[in-house]
Every structure is written in C-alpha cells, then in structure tokens.
Amino acid sequence: MDQRLHEAAIQGDVIILHQIVKEDPLVLHRVNSGWFGGSPLHVAALYGHADFVTEVLHLNPELTEVLDSSQHSALHLASAKGHVKIAQTLISANPDICLARDKDGRNPLHLAVMKGKVDVLKVLVQACPHAAQVTMDRGETIVHLCVMHDQLDSLKQLVNTIKSKEFVEAKDGRGNTILHLAVANKQIEVLKYLLTNATVDVNLANASGYTALDIFAQIRKDMKISDNIIDSMEDELQKAGAIRGKDLTWVQWLPKKKETLMVVASLIATIAFQAGVTPPGGVWQDNSNGHIAGEAVMAYNFPELFPHFLRANTMGFVTSLSTIMLLTSGLPFKRKIFVCILVVLMWLTITSMAGAYAISIIVIAPKIYKTSLGHTTVIALTVWYSLMTILLLAQMVRLIGKAFEEEHSRHLVAKRIQKFSTVKSLLRHLNGSSNSVQLSHTNV
Image 1: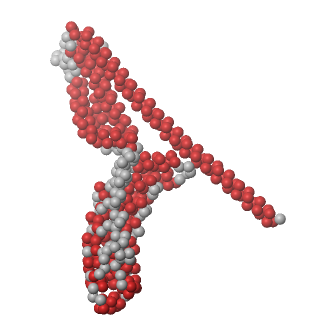
Image 2: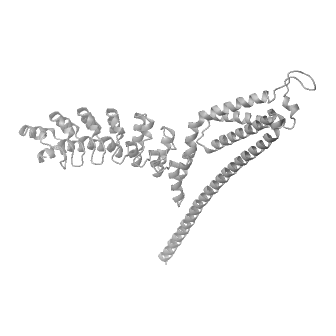
Image 3: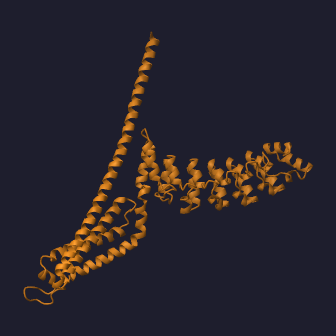
C-alpha cells in the first residue's frame, strides 16, 4: 500500500486521499487481498474514520471484498471495534460481506460477539440474520461464542432477535449446547437466563451422553472448597427439572408412550367397570329364593371367590383411573418420582386385572375343568406375582443404593469443605501469631 495513503487512512484525512487519487487515479484499484495491513478501507475501519470509509467506498466499492492476511474484511475490523456507523456503511455497500469468514472460520458477527459490541451486533443481525446461524470451523455457533466469552448481553440480543428453539439449542462439534458450556464455566447469570427466558431443553445430552446436570455433578465432585455459585447453580438446575444422562431413557420414553398408556388405561377402566356391574355369571333377574334382582349370581354360587374378585377388579379400576388422572394432570414427568408412581400404578393395574381374570375363568368353567383350571390359574398367578415382587424389590434396592451413593458423595464434599476451613483457620491463626511476634520485636 502507498505509504501516504496508509497514513491518510490512519488519520482519516479525506483531503489527502483526494490528492493521492488525483495524482494516481488507480491507486485504490491496485489493492489486493492478502496484504499484511489490509487496504485503506481496513485501516480506516479499524480507527473508526467513518467519513474516510464513505469516501473510499464511493471511489471503489469493491474494496469491501478485499481481505487482509488474516482473511479479515473491513467489516470484521469495524465489528470488533464497535464502530456502528462504519458497519452500516459497509453493509449498505455490500450486504453479503456479513458472510465473509476469516482464517478461523469467523464472520463479522462472531467478532462482534467476542468483543461484546452489542450495538454493532444488532445492526449486523438485522441486515443478515442468516450470518448468525453460520457455524465456525470446529462446529461452534455464535451462541456458543456468547457463553465462551461471557457475553450475556450479546446472547440476549441474539435470542430476542432470532426467536428459534433450534438456534438456542444448537450443538458444537462435541455435542455441547450453550447450557453445557454455561454450567462448565460456572456462569450462573447465563444459566438463569437460559432456564427462565430462553426455550432451552435442560436435559439435552452431548456426544458423550452427558447432560448439564452430569457436568455439574462432576464439578461438584471435584470441588474442594465451598462455592456459592455452585450452590446457586444446583438450585437453578433442580428447579428446572434437570436429570442425569443415564436417566434420559425413561424421560424420553414416556412422551412417546403417553398416548398408548392412556388408551390402555382407558380400556382397562372400561373393562373393570363392566365386570363390576355385570360380574361373570351375570345377575339375578327376579326376586326369589333369597336373592334380589340385580345381585350377582357369582356371590351365591361362589361365595368364597366373589370377595376376591371384587377386590381385584376394584383395585384394577381405581388404579387405571389414577393412571389416567396422572397422565392428564400436567405433572412434570422429568421428575423421576412421578414416573415411578406411574409405573407402580400400571403394575398394580395389570396385576389386579390378572387376578380378576383368573377368578372369572374358574367361575365360568364347567365342573369338569374347574380342578385343572384352578391348578393352572394358581401356578400362573404365583409365577406372575413372584415376578412382580422380584422386579419391585430390585427397583427398591437400586433406588436405595443410589440414595446411599449420593449421600456418600455429599459427605465427602462436606469433609473436604470442613478440612479446608480447618486449614484456613489454622493459617489465619499462624499469620496472627506471626504478626504479634513481629510487633513484639518492633516494640523491643
């Protein structure tokens, strides 16, 4: 670049620019990409000389496409420095320059975010919203840069402008969302904003299968001292219903099967109701021989089985209705306690209906088959109830073991904190003693 032209760009001297162009009309047309210092447009954009930039573009608009040795356009430099007027001028001359990428794969919007230039970012996003969704070479999006460089205001501007759930939940090359990064970097304000104002799924897993709560658990495990930020993060994640990656299976399973469960529970409730008002064998049609019309024939012919049938049928009816109520209540099934209740209700429903069915078969079977059917039914129910009991006990043991493990982990953290506090107190005491000794020597 001509030395006089370079100095004029640094000073923003339009008069000298015109003198140079008058002497050499092609001086601005001999600028090529790859120059170390860039073009006069780069220099003026860097130093914030808006009038100089306007005049250069009037003389040669194609300079907006020239890149320096780092593949930066003039808009890259203006965005990084926060020169709003220059950015507007450059965009007016060439809107597509918003998509220009430097050697690290960053466009002007990325640099504006990294430097926290919210006013420039607003102008760039309005001019070219598509540029905000361009990923860098390692897969990071512009929202990842907001969190990586702790630019909450830039993040708010982007979320409010580009109202897209997919945009906020975008993943980088390792599958991390901005929620993962906010937890990993202990950015409590970003975390609060994402969980309260942005439509972000708190339980998205990265490429390693870890959720935000998994990352938090690792931070908590490695923590050797008390940290108010960590405690605040834990409260926010718990309120949002965050879960561990290993528990994602049942959380993802329920929404897919919710409609099926509703249909099954409704059918069971219908069958149980019908069996309750019209038991196997029907009801008496007249008032004679000690019975009344409408009473169950089964109650007289099988008095020892009828109460068991009613109990099993009623249990199945009530638990199926409870399942329907639970599914339609809008309760947060991201909390495992509600899923456990739902599973137990379904177990009770199916088990109760199995018992009611077995009794019904015995009642309606001819006498010639009652003995064999009775044995078969007893064996089948015994196997079924044993299997359900084993599954229930196994689940209880697993939950108790998990509770003990979490309690042990909290105990270790508490011991670390206590140990650190003791050492800190001892050091404070020794420091005080040392100061006292020095004071005594001074007095002597």
